[in-house]
Image 1 (tube, rainbow, N blue to C red):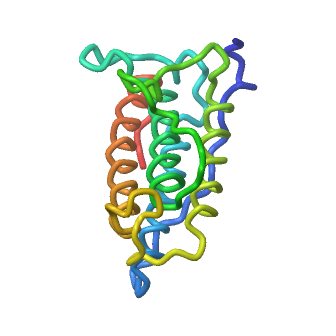
Image 2: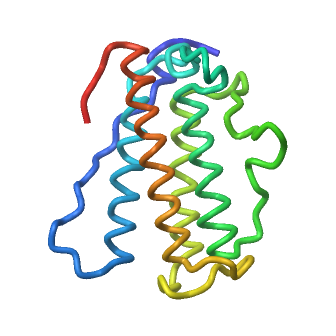
Length: 174
């Protein structure tokens, strides 16, 4: 795998959700879209080596690319499969959770592309459902709960990405 800039990811535009929100589900989607873009922007410009680095001794599998792969698996499971009822394979079956693991072919561009493809899949899987609807797979959760869960998990991992980016090249910020 090459370490050239051709394997780096490009930043994506992000918009802060409007402050006068009247639609709860719309607001949750807006925050999720903002967090997704922030996650992608945390790896934009990193080389494969920088994005694959695992600099935290207490978390030897945690890399920026691994975090994005994990967030891809989170969206697949919770939004598409659990809430949307899509008949898709889970990306995190196994112990330990394999969604954090990198292959030789994983680089910032390919991992971001897979994550972004999952966004479209998740949103199409949930088209036409309301926050009060039960998750189509198990019925154990409302769509409202699932969306809130994915927003909080994405936000938590964006914080991890903040740290990993700073350790990779010193970049800090939003």
